[in-house]
Image: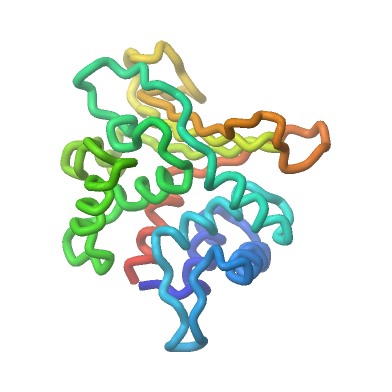
Length: 230
């Protein structure tokens, strides 16, 4: 399992961000108790899905490391507000992430979906059983029943919007064809999209009029999972 420094390097490399910035975000989150901390060297804390989720949000939802704690707290509490328009019987990410799920739990779910079962040190099957037995995830299909995001014909994109915190998870298809949503994005067919918002739209991360968006794809998800499994 990865140390924080290894996770920092993996995210900085795959997203093309200065490692010093990712390190700064990680430091603020660790000091705030949003990332595991325990000792140094060999005794340092090993990173979990929750730690990786916090760092991914912090890195992608803010431009200033010192704001990471507030930004992560705001984004992780967003809840899924969009109903799925996917035709009945068509498996999609909506099948794996229920309505009203928090954004942080949804992002953790994506990381788990991208994790190979064989030799998984995180005990994936046990985690799945725990999640599916909880009230929040009751009735959610298991790993084998959802679309694997490792499918080369698909693309997952996670998008962040500011200053009013909002997040979206897009499931895009590379091939041409019909979209159940009758929607297309950057030349891809939109297979599914999940929107996460705050109950109070007047809560802003900052008061400026500038609107920013940032995103990463399953390429980052795979890189993070690979780092976690070291």
